[in-house]
Image 1 (cartoon, rainbow, N blue to C red):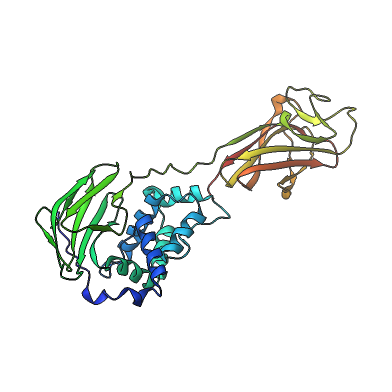
Image 2: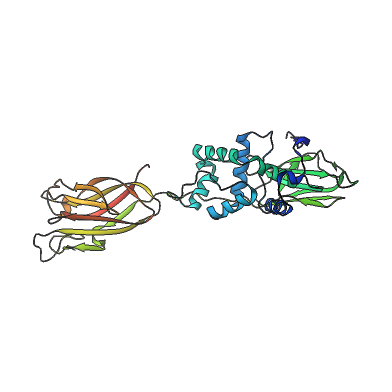
Length: 365
């Protein structure tokens, strides 16, 4: 494996007070890095690879909500997480799953992530660097491109007469590293870096022992690779006409030959008919509404979904008769379901055709 020697540029090292106005703020930001970790912000890293490192960091953090992600981002100086999440059309868990799975990480998310890391101020990166350049021996772990690649960096910032730290032991549980840090190596202000790979998907722990105390500026290990389940897929919805929940002057097999036929109810005289059907959709989006009906006469029906008209003159054709043997499916049209509860309403100013079933078939959004 090729060893990358990316010593941090001396010109970038500055007194902590240049980046952070108070010692308290400095402490809070550094503690945030120790809690949440970091992504690759080095000058030599391309924006594409920075975005991939950020994505690896984000996905392994497994933030439970947008608020939790924003809280972390603000404490790190990154700001709110604008990564392509659309709260009006998806849940946070659905977004996280699509964002973190390679087969659904779309160009939209790539562009949003690259744009986001460009908006992270230089000050935020400077804050990270400032935490790493305090006096003493410092180490950190940085996610690479892909969730199995990571870097371990160490740097000895002189304190008094102490200018280097001799390594007694460097070991990795759950992975392998290639680089200069090993027994007998002396870590100096020039810094050193290891390129590492997870052995599998289990947790990784780094052990670094030297003649000086090691200050970890990030977690000293990696949690097991978080597996994000695929987003739910649209499911076909089948509704029996006999399962209507609210109706006006309608009944099942009251004035017609059934079985399971929704039509005019007793006393079987001509009058307005209406029926409503409640159902749930596991995934919002586009579906096609079909109705299975029989009619020997033209009896158009108004169809609404969640209060909005789908078709004003649906089922306006005849099927050859009113018996179940005359049933035919009619395509009413494309509809947009919301996640969770939905309601279809059928109404007519006179008696219904004979209605047996409704179905909603997923179509491309």
